[in-house]
Amino acid sequence: MYTNRKAGLWILWSPVFYFLVAGCTEKKEAGSVSIQWEGERAVAIIVPQQFVSTVPKDSVKELLHIRLPNAGQPVIGDYSFKDNEVVFKPIIAFTRGLKYQLYVRNEFVDEIEIQAANTTAPEIIAVYPLLDTLPENLLKFYILFSKPMQEGDELNHIHLIKDDRDTLSSVFLDLELWNHERTMLTLWLDPGRIKRDLQPNKLFGPPLIKGSHYQLLIDKDWQDAEGILLKENITKNFFTSSRDSVCPDEKKWMINIPKAGTKEQLVIKFNEPLDHVLAERTISITDASGNELKGNLKVNDLGDSVYFFPDSEWKRGDHVLQIESRLEDLAGNNFDRLF
Image (cartoon, helix red, strand yellow):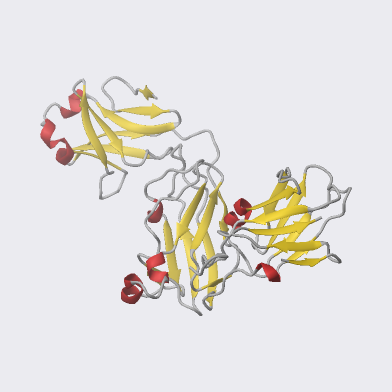
């Protein structure tokens, strides 16, 4: 432990780092295909008995198909029978505003349109890190949406292109990592390919290569929880620099200490960009008695500074800025270990 009374700052070392500072069914006309709704989502199409009377139950998957107009492949889903009708539930809810066609024995028999929603289309608010130069061992992206999104086929809507020509495959971890509200997706680059001593890295190489340009593309075919498509395609361009093989160093951080009796913001400037989401989750401020101060803590867009706006005026005396050791840089290195 060392003390610097002139700066009003002293550091106490421990496993955690401390800084002390001052359904319903919508029917068309009788005998027509109908839609089954759950809230604002079209979750099933019901095919009346007249269309399936000649279709054996054990052959319904082979003989009855739901397709988008001009699409070669049928929509993927499950079929079941109810009161001599066939209920088709797609893996992903139907998209509002689109038309779907029913084929029996490869012959068109009916078309139904999923009513467009009277709500706004979802948008991508941000893709973190926002920087346009990232380490070649970058661990993850965060994609933030304006509305809850559908789960299950995320990687079908996300593409990584190298040097404007090569679409890369198997670079992302095939794992759904959403927040509770389904408004933020954590997109991991495959850790097995990032770590140099693992077999996937030896077989396929790292996901990103130093000195290359990349485009992260997110297409607008992605539906939100109500089946509404994204407002537009999103492209994030970035360049890769050298590997980051150094743990975060809190001794290089700069802290602007606020004055007692004011509601000035407390500013911490990191010596490098850190994980944007973890920085907001792993930093807290308490008084000398251990009571957490109420206020608003925000990381700037670049991820290299954090700001705390207190709800009440600062009181004279010691305060604690607590940083959990699991806080990471962009390559996944934290205070305890390298990734």
